[in-house]
Image (cartoon, rainbow, N blue to C red; front, side, top):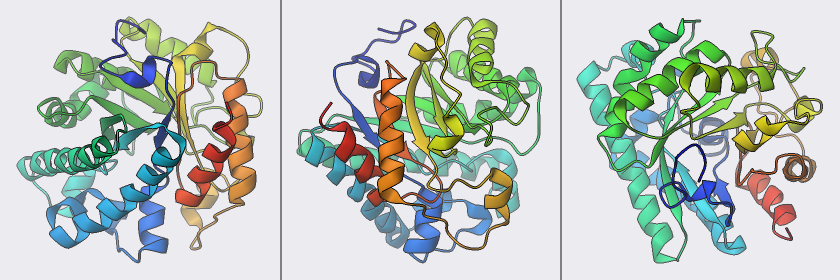
Length: 310
């Protein structure tokens, strides 16, 4: 049990099993599946049978990795941009957005059912992405509360806020989840120097969120950075036990460089797998390993070939 969250409810916290999660959903769909994503948003794909099938096939590749290695699977819903600002740009009303968030969890439940038929423990997570501008914690709570409420009304086991680069926004999300009585994980992203865009260290961000929320987050993760960007990030301290997962980038490029790039930098999957798996030696509580921008099932499989002996 961690911070009052029962490992039976979130088995990735029990410490007796490792969990695969997926890779860079949006980059994989665009560059490998030929899917056009307006505003780089995958959540509209859940509306139509043909694009839902594309998503099923995407998740199946990661289920296969979990099957091969006897691991569990965290099914992250394709809802990273299913929040009010992006929905407005894409022409969805608040009520339509609520339906789409719920449909995304229904799709994730189909994946969970497929996993269960193979004896794989699966966890369903409602994915929350960042807003495009800085907010106070109170503003962040109000902004993210509708999406949290959509997930809280479903069978999702938790919500996971990913690519968060400001501790204040993380505090607001954790408070919104606590108000909705749903477990929440926070995944921070860091720049090439291993710090948040605000200049804050990852350790300080984790400790601030815990201090400002009464340690209500179930756990923390790191995503959308290359393993080399984390070379000096994981110093000693009890805070490391709060970091339960990593989802890293294939490319060593900075966020600014990736935003400007027109090509897909897939990096070296073997080197990526070696470097990512090695982080487990520095993260004693880490049980969830997957990828982020530029990664696909090859990269995640490379991680797990190296984790499996442990």
